[in-house]
Image (cartoon, rainbow, N blue to C red):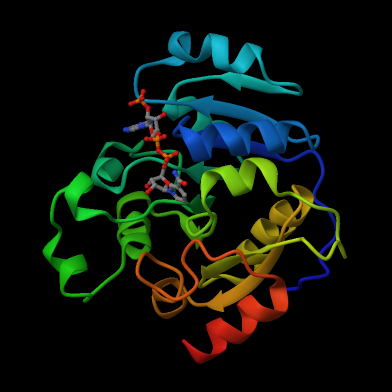
Length: 218
Ligand SMILES: NC(=O)c1ccc[n+]([C@@H]2O[C@H](COP(=O)([O-])OP(=O)(O)OC[C@H]3O[C@@H](n4cnc5c(N)ncnc54)[C@H](OP(=O)(O)O)[C@@H]3O)[C@@H](O)[C@H]2O)c1
């Protein structure tokens, strides 16, 4: 992953999940020149008011349409509902997984409880997407409020993991576009474990240097 990747203007981004993280990302991506389709589970009509209040090219859509539309597709729903994701349209797409596994909310998954796999690897198995785990370890209000220009001493960093370096670089450039640094945590399984709930860096507000140092020793 090249942290100096150029800004990635004008990408088509589908976002499935229009809650705190999904709607915040929609606003920020659309405000930075990307074209966004935003979906929830109840249908585009229920998002009309939300989308009308956003600047930039963002439209409400179905999850199927958001999946088809996106060069990059963000999945930002409760992990327990991942089986409901579109069964076509996500295969081989760069898929950004913001989801976290909370058994109290999502129900118990024995393979996650015994750590034999990770939630992002399960998202990959369900969708066939080229999964990059990102935006899962930042509290949504920080995503909304704490974007800063490159070099700003208050700029915070977001961990990114995945098995495809190109896909990670695309996601890193999107992260940079909206005011954060991206730090490579490693592969989807081993790297993802370093920034999932319970990890040292989960929801920590760190600059790139400190985040990198903590990920290396995790
Ligand atoms: N909140 C945070 O600070 C934070 C930070 C990092 C990561 N996360 C993780 O990111 C994910 C999203 O969190 P959130 O706080 O944004 O959740 P949220 O506010 O509860 O919103 C969840 C969204 O997912 C949609 N959704 C649920 N099932 C769906 C389906 N099958 N198809 C399409 N959309 C569906 C919901 O739509 P309907 O209302 O129409 O069902 C809703 O728009 C979770 O896994 C969470 O653990 C959260």
